[in-house]
Structure formats: structure tokens, C-alpha cells
Length: 411
Image (cartoon, rainbow, N blue to C red; front, side):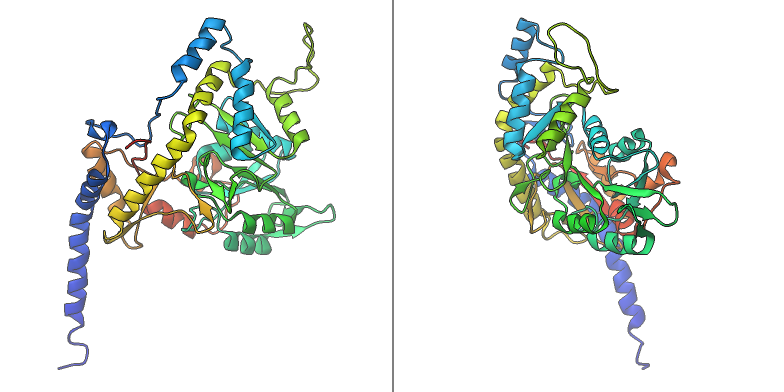
């Protein structure tokens, strides 16, 4: 018998195993999700991806706003929310704004991002990151992500800058191909998992690039014991209706630079100079103020945040245990150096199993379990297809294999 006579049998067995997995994995995921989920929301016909939870003083605080008439852009709840949020995040200043995109926009402006600058960011992010850069007249420059954090790959970023950038006499980094200044890096803590901030900060220090944290999804997440938003010069949060804490809409700017915080407050409140009756504005600015109604909701939510985070981590632990022995797919856990809020829990298919993604999305949504893929890579969107782009093989692989699963508090 020839030495390789058994090879076709082995190959056939491998194909058979692969076909069996393809036929069973979507149903296995459905059954595993059903086994983990419980509670009133899970008992419903439809289980959302992440719906808000209102079980505290929301009604009381909102009614106070209505009863007193303080419903708009000033009021005691705005001041309280900013103070309580700064204390929770361990920063000197928090400035409440209308939404996370507005927060990012101001972070970029305060970091001296100018027209025709380039801003490094992951291609695997929500579109708000790129849009905020465009509001400044600047250009997104997309870089790769890695699987441990789902965030910016520091090693590949360092190699990309070494190959494409140069330092000029003014001390700044420039893209040799475009001639544009590379002014900032905006890493995003994807789904609540902290990125490797020390490694990214070291790169920024080497190239004189400003580090701005897109912490929109990471309220309650920690990097080496510090809340996200404490390493970059400035950071942005989001309180959209699907976040761990919601103010309906809303966002916030975080910084440890007191003067930067003062400037952020001034720019987001139309640059109005305080006066008892005069309307004097000393520069072009933005009406990005958070209304008192929204801040009232935020104050009530912030009171419950520690409990929310505990419940979300419990859900994540149960998911991790349930999917530990499911072949072909794994639950994405927090990196060793961080503590995640597990905003949206993630499953990641093994490489070679990409075909399963849409089959699983269809099977779960068909039975009322809401699941979603990662965002479309920014480099594939028509308005950003022309932007500078590094090798994105890591981000492309993650996007082809990632599935978000139900993550609401109390499931």
C-alpha cells in the first residue's frame, strides 16, 4: 500500500467534521444562549441586545425637573451629574454634553486637530469616531486591531508608523505619502474591553501624537486599576440608550487637565461669558449642552451603576462557562491587564468558521434572541474609502467572525 493511502480518508473525515459543525453550531448557540438567560426580559418573546434598565430614582428626579421647570440646558442635575461622574471615573473634570459624538468632536478640537491633519483610529469602530474627525476637517487614518482586546494593535501600529511616517523640524509626525500631519490617535475600548493603553501611549510619546481615548463604550471599565479615560489627554463617553448607563442621549468629556476641562465647558455652552443679563460670546463655539432632564436620568442611573456592573460581569461569567466547551466558537473575555464592563458580550468564531457568522445571526434572531455583527469597517464605507489605511488583516478577520449577544442588565 502506498505510504499516503490513508490521506483521502483523513481528508474526508475532516470535511465531514466541518460539515457537521456547520449544521449544528447555529442551533448549539441558540440552545446555549437560552440555557444562560433568565429573568423577565429573557422570558419575553424577544430578547434585545442591550435595553435600558430603570429601577431607581429616575421617575422622582425627572418629576422634580418638570415640577420646578428646570428641564433645559442648566439645572442642579447637570452640575451633580458632572461632579458624580468625575468622582466615579477618578478624573478632575467631567463635562456633560448632548451625545458621545459631540464629546469626541470637542476632544479633537481641544487637542489642536486641524483641517487636513490625519487622525489615527481603528478601522473596527463605530462610525462616530470617524465622523467626529471629519467635523474638524481632518482625515481618518485607519489602523489594525487585535483579538485580545478587539482594539488597536500596538505592535502593528508601531510598524506602520515606522514604515509610513517621519518626524519633521516642527516636532510633529507626518505621513510621507500624503504630506499631512498625523496629530492624534483615538483608540476605542471596543464593547468595554480596555485596550493596551501603555503600549499606545509609548508610541504617541515617541511620535509626538496626542492620545485621545474613545471611551464611549467603557464606563465602568478599568485599565491596570484606573478607570478608562485617565491615560489619554482627554476622553469621550457615551450615554446612548443602549449603554451601561443611559441619559437617553448624552455623552461626556473626561480630563485630568483642569484648564482643558474649563475650555471644554466653555466651548460646549456656546462660549457665553457669565453675566446676570448680557449675552456676550467670546468665540465661535457649540451648543452641545446636556439638558437637565437628561442629567437627572443620569444621576439616577449613576446611583445604580455599581449594581449594573456586578450583574453584567455575572452574566459574562455565565456566558464564558457555557461556551467553554462549544467547539468552533469562544466567548471574548477581558484582557489580563484590564477589567471590562462587558457592555456588549461577544462571541468570536474560530478562524475558518467565518461562514457560520450569518447562519448564527439568522438562527438567533429568528427565535427572538437579538444578535448583531461588529460594525462595518470604516475603510469600507463610501465616504471614508479614500482615507489612508494600514494593513487591516486583523480587523477584517475579527469583523468576519464576531457576534454580539444579549447583554442587558438583569438577564
